Length: 68
Image 1 (cartoon, rainbow, N blue to C red):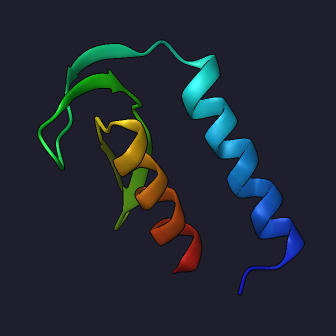
Image 2 (cartoon, rainbow, N blue to C red; image 1 turned 45 degrees about the vertical axis):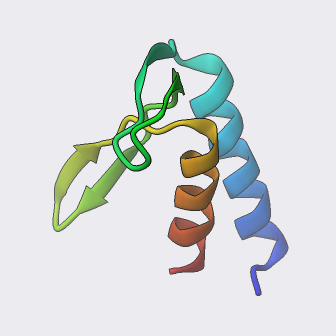
């Protein structure tokens, strides 16, 4: 279970990714559906990886990232 600070940070991150950055229309890298894409960045072993995800896959991504 997440504490209040983690929930607040997760909500803030979602707001920034969904509403403050430019979103493009294209294919989601996970489910391959055509939709407006969110482009979050994830750091893996010091390298940053950019994803192009639809809203549904992005919500799953945020839940999994916040849980680990």
